[in-house]
Image 1 (cartoon, helix red, strand yellow):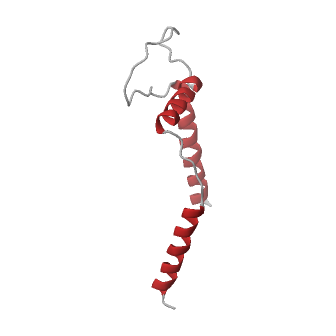
Image 2 (cartoon, rainbow, N blue to C red):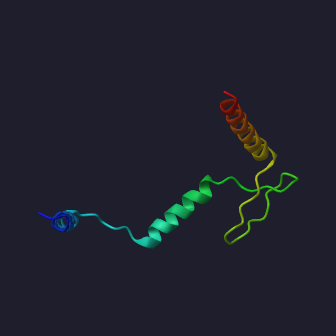
Image 3 (cartoon, rainbow, N blue to C red):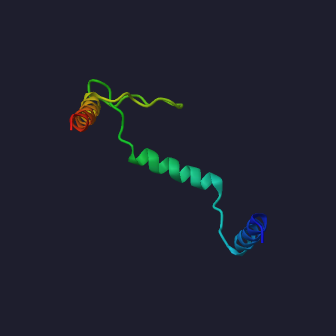
Length: 91
């Protein structure tokens, strides 16, 4: 038996398995609407500098830049990684 015959057997078995499975497909519009509703329900309302709710922007690519806390956390991680590299190199 050659390797091509192994793949032919595998392909036949997978095709038979696919035909035997009964997987209902949900309507695409319902899934998209449900996911969009969950995402908007879980997301906190954006706020402006004064603390008031900011107007919503539409379209892609409107993610806010990380705030001061996010920057501090990122710098802590970068510093910890650099210290670990220096310690490993020194050892």
